[in-house]
Length: 206
View 1 (tube, rainbow, N blue to C red):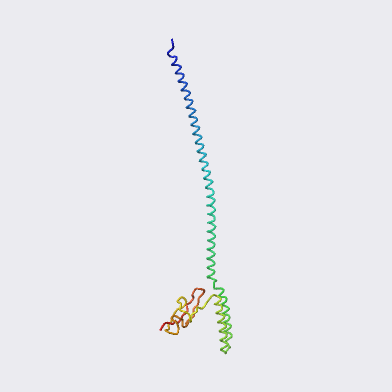
View 2 (view 1 turned 90 degrees about the vertical axis):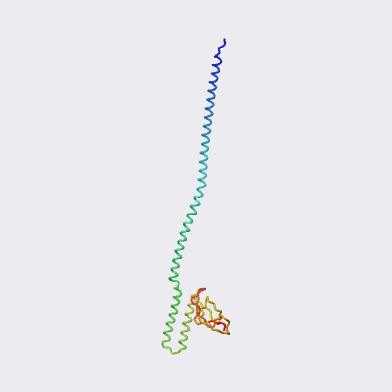
């Protein structure tokens, strides 16, 4: 008689064997998954390290450029400060000693006046006195001209309020209107700057 439990035992063994095989496969699969995960994490770390290195490489040139520009700015600021100080010193010196050369030449004129005074102390000839005066006057005006002083033209010129000051007006038909008839006090300028306007008499229509 066939044992009814024989087939059952074999089936049980097969089931156990299959379960064991399945468990091993699951463990192998889990190990593979863990290994893959570890590899993925390692790759991610390597990628992060690579990105960090690239960022560091990109930052270094920028830092160097910043340092270079900052140093240039500091040097430029220092140079400008030194230039500003030199300009201030030169300005002070100009204000203090700007008239030095002119005054030295004026001293020569003063010497001529003193010589002229001594020369006319015992002179009774008016022509001699006039000659000394004219010589001193010419010497004086030459010094002022060399210093840049220039007389403003007036008589016969058209009235210009930038250079002339009308203190008189004379109705006349002999001269065009606004023509300067006479110079009452000489005016002077230094370059384009008027030091003193010329006082004039201006013709107006009758």
